[in-house]
Image (cartoon, rainbow, N blue to C red; front, side, top):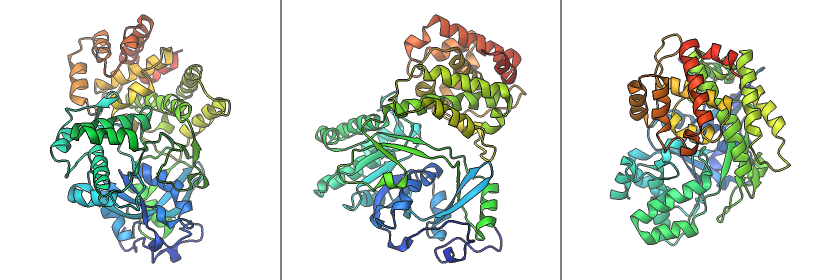
Length: 479
């Protein structure tokens, strides 16, 4: 914003009284965590739960790393790595200037420097937020033909993938006689800790069988469940937040007030006191993970694809339609009947809270953003249960693949399998052919589900209704 001073450490004392600020001197932080994938979600979640601990334990500062672009580094370096977190509720924003970062590296510019920092004995955790597609997997196994994996196997000292960097950091530590760091994934993978451990061990074995056995036996990969809605930051957000704090923040983050983090307590090298920062440490994350993936993420995908068809730009826009809101509540009830949850989890209260969170009018969580990378999300979110309301969510995805909204607007298919999915949609002569083409992809749709006669019929019924009536009218009549 022209004429406005930049957010920096020196500017902290000038912030309005209602703006929160760090209760420690950011200059005292030391790096104990390296985070791969320094995007908005990490800065509103793991960093959010770590920040309250840093006055007492400054050794747990976070060094961020971007594996692709320099945008976040370039925005935050002039700000001494500070940024504003805007917790956006129905009644406005609660603003907090955050200072958990010790710096940001851009991996493609100097991969050796990132590996060197990961090999530092002071670093005890390397965490990751690279989205589902960033793990170079095919189903639950390593995609050994992935171009990034092939590159990293050929040039292990100059990796480009998250797995390649993890392996390079672990090899460097092992060569120096330093204990391995804990690998903490913060992405919505099924059984995320176990999955990342398997992928990393396989990658290591392809480099060197002994190294693969070392990873399998010595490297901890605790499971996690993360729950916070973090929409993409817009230019309007930047302008409004900068005006509110009185200085320019080039890259603030916006999030809902709710935040939950369930973490398996498996950190051989130690960890921050995350329970004091609001996290919950448990022995078994799986019930929480299944509840969140099926209820929150499954509902989100259903809303996103119906929203893209009907022209509902945000989740809150969609939830303003009574029929859609009732449909999502019923979908959650159907799914909840199949979950096996420990008695301490109040699933009914969780569902009620989700409906309130989705309807938050202050949060512009775009359906287009949620609709990205469907091939990586649908298997664990919706392809696991035969219910009539899930069938509508699946059909909405199939209709979305055809590339046009109910009003004729072009829809963008942003997906690692875009070419394959787009070709299937273009080549399908009718709705039944499209269903059959996608259901034949056994790496996406479980064969037993794809062959279930009742589910196949309901998906086709929903898809034909979406073609003829559109998303809004189909939701009105679907039960």
